[in-house]
Length: 93
Image (cartoon, rainbow, N blue to C red; front, side, top):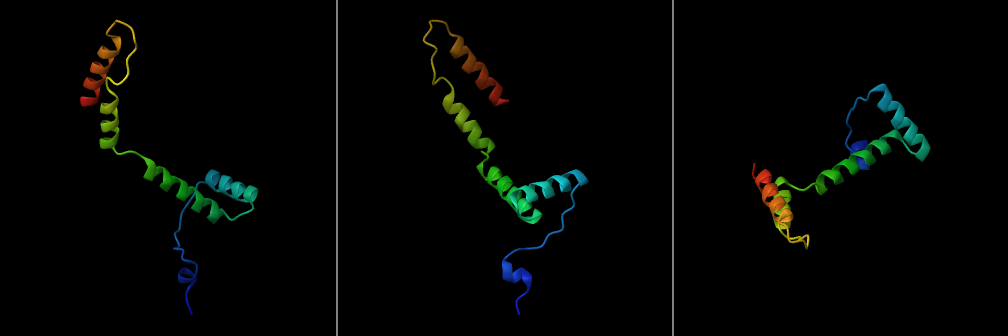
């Protein structure tokens, strides 16, 4: 006979919450008419999605460099060009 773990495809983990976290999780579960475990799983899924969407430092650097000097103010002053040069110096450090 398969164990509960094998049957439902879930792994058991013991997690401790502060009293406030526990109260808020129970309240959220009650509002949604689901279990506290389901609320915790949904929160974990959301956090993991957010992590997957984060850009690496290299990608942020590449995008920043690609934006330098791409936009012009249309005025005869060099404010935008000086700004980009200063910004590039800051990003280098």
